[in-house]
Figure 1 (cartoon, rainbow, N blue to C red):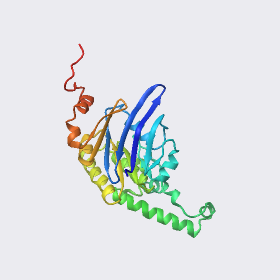
Figure 2: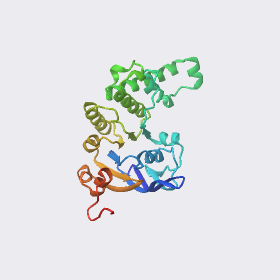
Figure 3: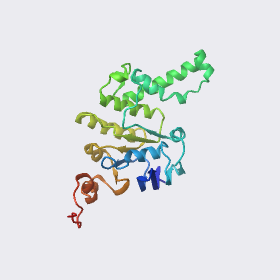
Figure 4: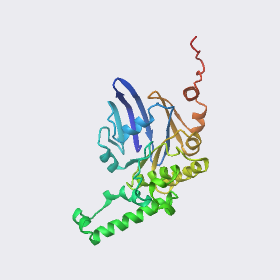
Amino acid sequence: MSLLELRAVDKIFGGLHAVRGVSFQVERGAIFGLIGPNGAGKTTLFNVITGVYTPEHGQILFDGQNIAGLKPALIAERGVARTFQNIRIFRTMTVAENVMVAGHHLHKASIASAMLRTRAYDRDEQALAKRAHELLEVLGLAELADEVAGSLPYGSQRRLEIARGLMLSPQLLLLDEPAAGMNSQEARTLNEQIRFLRDQLGLTVILVEHNMAVVMNVCETIHVVDHGETIAQGTPAEIKVHPKVLAAYLGEEEPGTEASP
């Protein structure tokens, strides 16, 4: 059984079909790319999967259960985490504090213990700090743990968002433009980190990304949307030469069609 399956999902805004009949499956342990030109509906699909929007039609099955229409917090509890196209960090907090905040749902101590700063609360905080440090180590941010998050370079802030998402201990991680603002070396490092998340932490990853070098190097399956509809799916080698994909990105005519006079 696939970890995630979309079945004929529609999302409509005021009569505009932002997503129309999109279906795909993401296998457990996959690194899956979701690409398309600007305005194609990629982030809308992420928002539908994570409960920000409720689809008008269709099903979203996560681990065999339909999660369409559930609140974002409930979907996160089931094991779905995401990053955002626009960075959302607590800029005045330290790097470590940013990651720890995302894990406070794991606290076992009561609210009273937190208020009184009991030993149980201290143990929880130590466990969170240890987990946060491990994740910062994985993403190459451990040396910056005590730095103010807002002072980090853009690429490091992106990786901090990923570390924060991992504090939820998800099965599925959705990354929205993780390579945005990164230089070529940072992007190559990101590729390695995404593979590590899958190979060593057992995560399934869905990647929305405009950096085609990242997509083609790290994704095993790529699903392409344009104007809210699926136009192709396949391996990176297949997608590179797919006529509909070339037409969508480059404005080329598909073979067998003629330009309008």
